[in-house]
Image (cartoon, rainbow, N blue to C red; front, side, top):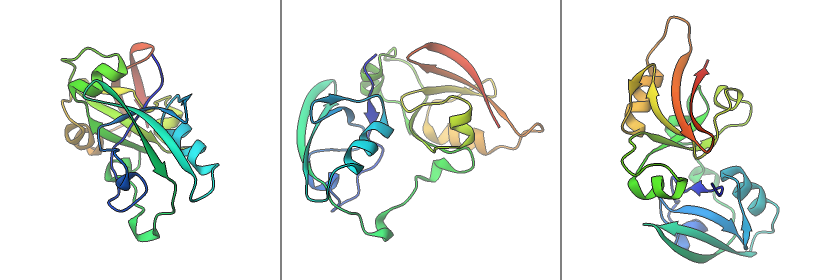
Amino acid sequence: MVGAAVVAEVTPGGPAGKSAIRPGDVIQAVDGQKIGGAPDVVDYVSSRDIGTTVMLHYARDGKPGQTQVVLGELPNEDVKQPEQQGRIGMALQTLTPDVADQLGIERGTKGAVITDVVAGSPAERAGLKPGDVIVEVDRAPVASSEQAVEALRASRGNGGHLLRVRGAGGTRFVTVK
C-alpha cells in the first residue's frame, strides 16, 4: 500500500480551504514526493515558508487529482483539535467506500479510519497509525467514527480498550490504555 493521508477537515478561508481539497480526499503526494501518512504532510509543509506554493496529489471518489496550495498561517482561533482525539490521542473519520479503495481495504468494510495520531499519546504507544481502520472496540463492531468514539469513551474496569484494526499489515488486535 502506498501511504496516504485522509483529509478530515478543511478550514474555510485557510490554505486548503482556498484550494480544491475537500474532506474525505486522500493525499498521496506533495510536490511529487510520496507520503507515508498525515505526519509526512505536516512535516513537509511545515518545512516550507509561508507563501510557498505546493502541489498536492490526491484521490477523490477513486479518481486522481492535483491542486496547488499556497501555504499560509491559520489564525489561532481557527486551529482546533478534532473532538475525537480526547485522552487516547487520535482523530477518526467514518470509513467510506472510496477511502477504503484508497487504503486497499475491501469496499464493504465498516469502521472508523484513523486520520491523525498525537505524538506520545496512548494511540501512538499502541502502534496505531493514520490509515489504520478500527472495525471493533472491545469486541463490538463499529460502523462509524461516532460509534468508535462512543465505545472508546465508555469506561472499562482495566482502563484499556481492545481494538480490532485493519491496516497495511493486515488485521490485528491492539490494546489502548
